[in-house]
Image (cartoon, rainbow, N blue to C red; front, side):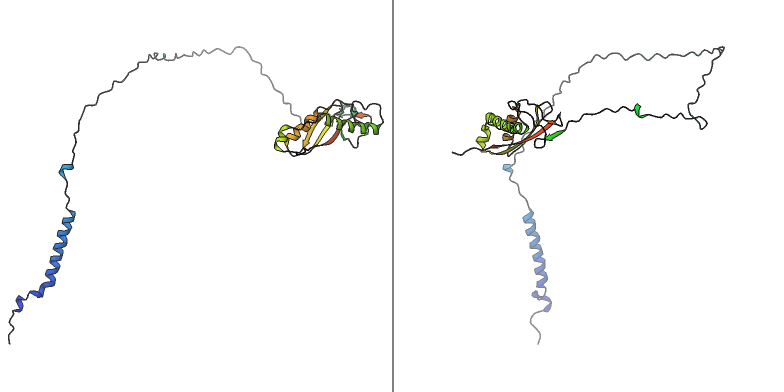
Length: 242
């Protein structure tokens, strides 16, 4: 039995090929449609370009009066004149000052009497507790050594109470404490080298001010010679809270 359709004219045989070709054609057309650009002519403003000639600026030319160049240096021509050597010149002979082994060396013996020794007097500083004769405070004259020492300490305490003044800055800040003061009574009886150590510089300055007001005294003596005497004194700064 023969088939009714001719196999050469079967449409579905190459359908996959036709589908692939048609799909590629549609993809190409879609891509071109997406890439196509349009412009709205009504919104394009080309504007007006005015071209003007640039004005040439006048350049100010300043003329400077320059001095003419200096003249070339004058060349000096030296003339050499040959003079006959007529006068005889005596040559100066320089003798050597170096010595040799044949010459004797003069030995110089220095005697003890030729050496001069200068005595340097050094001031000794002695603590108040070990000094033989303590400094005499004005008003303590004519007493024994023990009484002079006790009178000195009493006069120092009276002096501190008389000139004591609590600094207002320390009161405002609430600063109080003990200040240790060390000073020296030199060989002339003058108070020097005042040093202090305390809780604050305000109190230290006040303590140094009080000690600086001490009067001149009779100097302390060690073996009958006036020497420096070091003395330490504590001063207590304390206020009562109301």
